[in-house]
Length: 439
Image 1 (cartoon, rainbow, N blue to C red):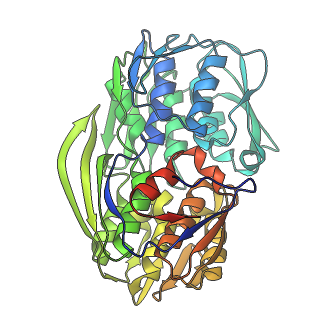
Image 2: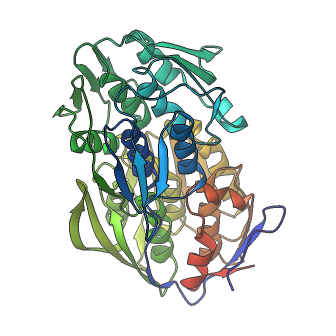
């Protein structure tokens, strides 16, 4: 029987001494699910979304578009949805504040869409969201002529009054798919082309989906250009498995002896698979099979077996393609021969939690030799003894603790594990189905 979090949110993950073995389909991609719902909301006709992720964050996006007058219905068998789009400029301001909970994607992307609507829209969220910096989208949108206000100029709540949007050329100081997406979505409503230049490659799901919906998108190296749109039509969208969710089991099967796990239908968009490249450089045994495309997104099955690893240096040019998975590199480094250094990871400090601070604190408590660096961290191999990991309300840190426990000598307690509902609601069941031990 699958384990469940105790009332205080503490779950203990014991060593998986027999290895992890089996096959699984990880939850649908969270990033793509968000974008599918948002873009469907401004399409001119209904959009069928297959395998939409039903997790806390993505449901926040669904509730947000419903609050703006968009009808969402179950699409029949499976987890499909039908979103009855209101048209490019058809969203209606709700009577009150739109509560997006803990969803950073919702609060950073929706203002781009609201910039072209008629009326005033206010977005707010939980305490964590209210601490996360929003000036990174506020500043470029203001320069595009969007009437947007933030608390103290940089924190939620955010209020957007739709109206005139100007063409714009924006060179992002920090690689961020959320910032890029907010600017590109606002570009749909601009009076001329909008250009975004990335300092390093970051995920391009927004561009892919907008192109499939009929928007005119051009790419030249790290520059993306979008032209004003008159209408969008998406039709149907298939959501692949989330690479960020698959990543936990790629790492677990690699560092736990005797493991062999097949992950089916995983999105392998190269702007997301930096971790895969890092693992292969470290000596991981991963096979990419049955490659195909779904809705413009590359998809494959991943077969991973336990392997001996060597420490490497991870530079900033790859960090942007692995930003959500970089804490897992610390765990890989703990089981690698020699040292592992990660650079270009400063963005981790402004996620759901300060992931570098939380990572170092928990890994140190687990017996790992890890140190903070200016823009990342360094780890020496030696394994994980055990101990207690604090999730700090961050779903990815909670799952990192779970994998650390399965690979540890004595087991790891994870405090606040219930926050995994944000992206991987059945994580415990999956872990036990592969041979993990949960108390």
